[in-house]
Amino acid sequence: MIPLVKTGLPNPDILMPALEKVLYSGYIAQGTVVDEFENKFSDYVENKFSVSVNSGTAALHIALILAGVKKGDEVISTPLTAEPTNTAISQTGAKIVWADIDLKTGNICPKDVEKKITSKTKAIMVVDYAGIPVDIDAFQTIERKYNTPVIQDAAHALGAKFAGQKLGNHFRFTTFSFQAIKHMTTIDGGMVCFKNEDDYEKAKLIRWFGLDKTKTRQKNDITIQGYKYHMNNVNAQIGIVQLNRIHELVDPYIENGKFYDQELKGVKGVELIEYYPKSEPSYWLYTLKVENRDMFISKLAEKGIMASELHKRNDSHSIFSNSKTSLPSLDIFSKKMVHIPCGWWVTKEERQKIVNVIKNGW
Ligand SMILES: *Cc1c(COP(=O)(O)O)cnc(C)c1O
Image (cartoon, rainbow, N blue to C red):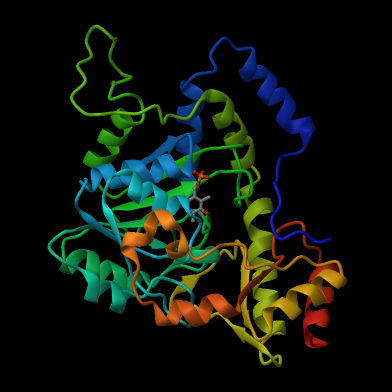
């Protein structure tokens, strides 16, 4: 079966000596290897205000704290995402206010977000679902107009671009995840990128109990609630080796995604996702809208291809029941959406086979 997601680790000949070195170096906690990983990542996204953490969820939580989100506040968010986007919000005690999606893209709809802004809105959470950048132009306007920070959860969108610039630079906060099946894994890990130096400096305190690593314990005075969210040298070492070959990890998703864009255009029973102007997706998943989804999935399974909707609309979880609202575009989209394999493990022959099977109907 051609899988939908897969863990991509470097060649053991390269990874294992690097790992062995750090494991027995006597320093496996957060040290200079973490700094080196952060610097390399900063170069990749071209944002020097990047702070590494031990998960994408921790990155989201730090962004929410710095946005000033507290119990009783509201955060506008999308239900079409992986659950951690929204459990990170509920963790702060804030109420999630769902915005509907844009039927053409599956991403959170800026017009609906604007309708739902109130005096209690402390942040807007946007997700580049499946690696398709959100409507960055529209959300930058909203961030300015309402003076309300946008948190861009780019866990699916490492390497995606807007106006020629990689995600990680467009809003006050952008977060990434290096969990097992993302574009780039460090086993677990995350990154939060900032526009402001002040947020960047505070994030470094919050990720380590509120303590300042540059001072001795005796000289430290904790003034801000912190957490154990820092990355360690071992995960960072894996991250460094991964970043050395980042094009091997990200580029095939993009090449395969563009191939499907071309080959599946106009195919009967298939509706393609649209992209916003100036945006270049990194296609963590390749999403289609199809009629008779169950039949589509079983036809592909019969031919050895995994297809699935993968995510469950988050508004259907009991924990979020007090946010329930009508979301007509999501109702339509979530009945039709399905993902097909698109990552580095899909060969040229396999992607052609996938297209052929879809063209033959289901
Ligand atoms: C994976 C993921 C996260 C969480 O990342 P972790 O590193 O697993 O904590 C958050 N948001 C989205 C959209 C994700 O896919």
